[in-house]
Amino acid sequence: MILKGKIWKFGDNIDTDIIIPAQYLAHTDPKVLGSHCMEPVAPNFPREVKAGDIIVSGTNFGCGSSREHAPIAITALGIPLVIAKTFARIFYRNAFNKGLALLEADIYDLVRNGDEIEVDITTGIIRCGTKEVTAKPIPPFMVELINEGGLINYLKKKLEG
Amino acid sequence: MGMTITEKILAAHADKDRVEPGEIVDCRIDLAMANDITGPLSIEEFEKVGAKAVFDPEKVVFVLDHFTPNKDILSAENCKKIREFSQKYKIVNFFEGGECGIEHALLPEKGLVVAGDLVIGADSHTCTYGALGAFSTGMGSTDVTYGMVTGRIWLKVPESLKFHCYGNWQKWVTGKELILHILGMIGVDGALYSSMEYSGEAICALSMDSRFSIANMAIEAGGKNGIFPVDDKTTAYMKEHASRPYKVFESDADAKYAQIYEIDVSKVGFSVACPSLPSNVKDAGELGGTHIDQVVIGSCTNGRLEDLEMAATILKGKKVRKGLRCIIIPATPAIYGEAMRRGYFQIFLDAGCIISPPTCGPCLGGHMGILAKGERAVATTNRNFIGRMGHPQSEVYLAGPAVAAATAIKGTIARPEEVL
Image 1: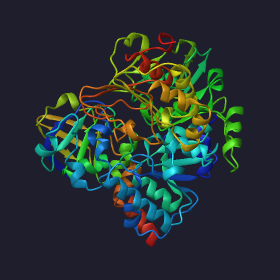
Image 2 (image 1 turned 30 degrees about the horizontal axis):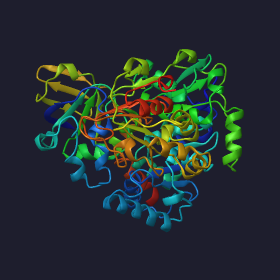
Image 3 (image 1 turned 180 degrees about the vertical axis):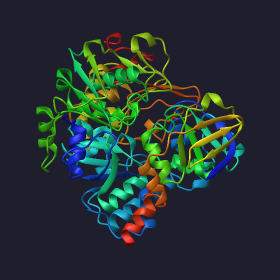
């Protein structure tokens, strides 16, 4: 699957309190959560980001709390993918469980905010202008889980079967 | 090649003789927990899959501790949703109101976690229970739903980092100062996906309360779990609090570690994590003169009796600096009651502190002590991210209870000897 979109760059250690501040955690409506995504560092982000745009970050993206509100807020804005050098582990599981794709690649210094980027999710090949980088492959176990339609679909089939 | 304590607990729960770092294992769980923030999402997923029951009504726990006593209508609705779910599915360990405390202080105190257990919780600080020699880790609501329904969870076996600690502790220095010191050393992703294992004479010298503080902040280094060997103090704690049988696992002498750190605790001073990362650590002595508007002593990291005792010892006969708010939050009703019986409450009230009911409250900027633009807090909590305790332009300094209490008196960041 090929994704094309504009890049939004965020630096290292983007924590879940930045992705969705705790004051909004009593909400479960994805639209409300999306409307406050990245608010502490980029208050205009929810209004300016377009569906299909892609977040590019540095190390340890998603560190901090276990709140699933974080990947929910990102996907609510129509963002299908985050590319980062590394991800925090709880966020990594949560993102795949919530249908947000993640790729590990060190492209932060190679791209600019607003650049158009093209990503083949299956092969991990990332193209931005003349630059091409291959992301670390998604672990086989996660690929299996994705092919099952995610953890909840897997569980549903298990309960029905 | 031998195995680490973490590998042994995972192997036992996967019914395997051994496991290797990097391996994906399907494990039995002993407990699955969620709170008033993560619980509603877990329940939504539970309903989506059409589950008819939880795997064991005694092994599913809900703790309504974050935005409680309900801070607004939405929080009240979320608690109501969990209350109704708990009634419907006959959840035994549902905690709210006067029975409720901060989850990671409450569960060990109620004897719900013992050595050798495998616990998952929809809260990142679930790693706290490693202090008991259990494997515990935080996950999202969806993963915890999977655990609540099936009694199992998939896990990637982590590599282990060993922190071997020796030497004598300085007066007033606790587990909190050590974990902040370690965060300063290895950074907020220094233990990414890894297990943080503690050992050595200086660890045996620590109280259980201090061990809980250290295990609690494994996540702040990106760690999967923090874990301690079981000793006399652990077994005494379990004897006092739990009736379930426990199982002691020990790391083998030839277990494999990705890295071993040697730490002389006599060199650990009054570590303070400056805004806006828990790894941005300096000594309180370097931060003298930093004006502070609010002090918070509480949370799943430092709301236990040892923390309140230390704060009371320093605040006794003193006054909180005019213009500074000092909020004390005993983590559980039992801690609250004991602090009251020991006379700490009178000391805190005489000093001009506010005593809050048990709640996560201000730690995550929820309620009961939110910061305005430009305000600064010293907190015994676990995170100082941008906007963590309120306005994005407010700041949080993380410290242990002694520095927090001394700062409340002085009005600027202070070491205890500056006020005693």
